[in-house]
Amino acid sequence: MEKVYKPNVIEWVLRVGVFGTFIGHGCTALLVKPSWIILVTAFGFSSEMAAKMLPLIGILDILIALTILVKPYKAILYWAIFWTFITALSRIIAGQGVPEFMERFANIACPLALLVFINMKEKATKNYE
Image 1 (cartoon, rainbow, N blue to C red):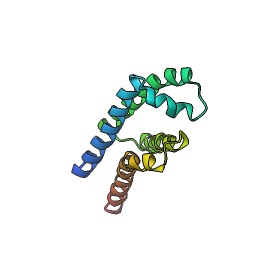
Image 2: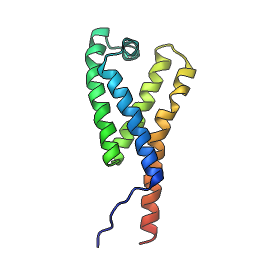
Image 3: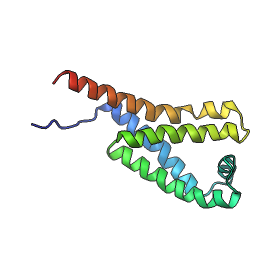
Image 4: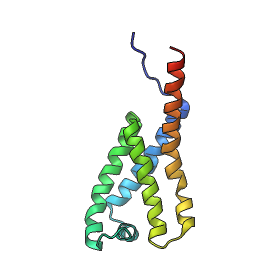
């Protein structure tokens, strides 16, 4: 008999946290926020290219937000951790300083915590089988 995967309250809080981060940033990217163009150009892209990329980034962020809310696939969580780290790091690269990076560390920690939680839950389930 196949076991049914049931998320608990802690997992839901983390899923909603990741959802909130990615839906908020996705919607802001869709608006092509001028201060975010600087963050993209810090990686060597032109302002014009950055303005074209932001809506695509926004759509991807929204898709990630919705997917994590529905089902937190590990591959997507790995991407979320990588992406939140890179976007926070862009603040340092763009010359905004380490405090700007640190301020955004919760954006990294939330998908990381969700991934750790899911891995621990899977390990515990295997130990009881």
